[in-house]
Image (cartoon, rainbow, N blue to C red; front, side, top):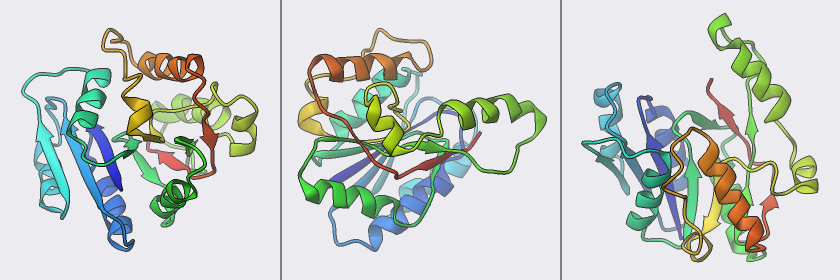
Length: 207
């Protein structure tokens, strides 16, 4: 049914993985959670507990390969046809997050779904304030608004895609700068006329 794919680099992702695992365990679906640590130097001990969860695997790389290659590698290891990509520094907004995506799969209407990003209402510390302000203004957008320009507001931090579509595009391994791999991936979706369905199924960006 669904493979949840989470690339990790120097971030404690245990809270995210445990939450997703708990939601999946309440649903009657076949699943796996695959995490790859991209040669992190931090939170190694904390993230180690991930591999103890049922149907969950944690792979650790000896050398950093970057955001595009690690996502492609996650897909290579995935055994199911539906791929849910989540960044390591996000957290589902509610307990129906996974179920909402399962409903999308069962509807059989589209092959790519984007859930969206949101931010906590409480302002963070000053060192993270500018990122929070930017995110609230530019990234926290409703599905209705995103649907007006479906290729403009897609985030690799939270999207569901069928493997048949992903395998025709993949993330460009020549992109090394942060964020640009998402832009090019979405542009390839547009060029190939792959429809993106936007839904309100947000994750918090833990800035």
